[in-house]
Length: 182
Image 1: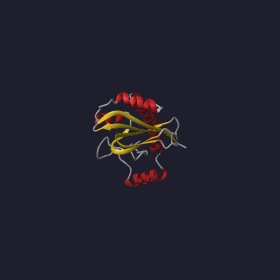
Image 2 (image 1 turned 90 degrees about the vertical axis):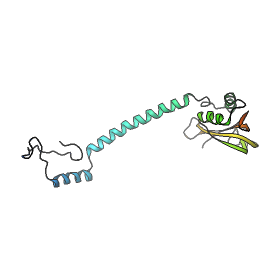
Image 3 (image 1 turned 180 degrees about the horizontal axis):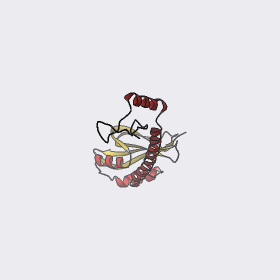
Image 4 (image 1 turned 120 degrees about the vertical axis):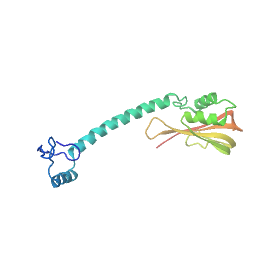
């Protein structure tokens, strides 16, 4: 049998031009066979791709699981559910006088997306229904993260304000937290 696109029987007829080589049937025969493969489908192709896709799926699932286990292992704030505990951990890791760049770096290592806001408002919420306390005219590093709340449709929303005094933290951390979902 030949390999590749032409997978039909080829008779091994010795070629008078080159000993040891095989004569291939006429071009029109090969063209007809290739055309049949496109209209009927190639059973070898279906088998290869189905087993390949199964193998790829297994590798993808295992890789995702391993990656997920590794990425959260070193985060101090990953499994926290209470805003007061989150505030204590962040205050202990970002003491007064920490430069803004170090604050952003540490919070991003914890999985937050951060930006510096000047003379802005921060709303401290503790539930999705409450309006929360409004803090006006703050210079702060605004950090946000969404975690799963144990359900496919529920999310734990974190918003953290690390208050700044110029370009360093002043030691104050305000935590906004609520669980959202259907």
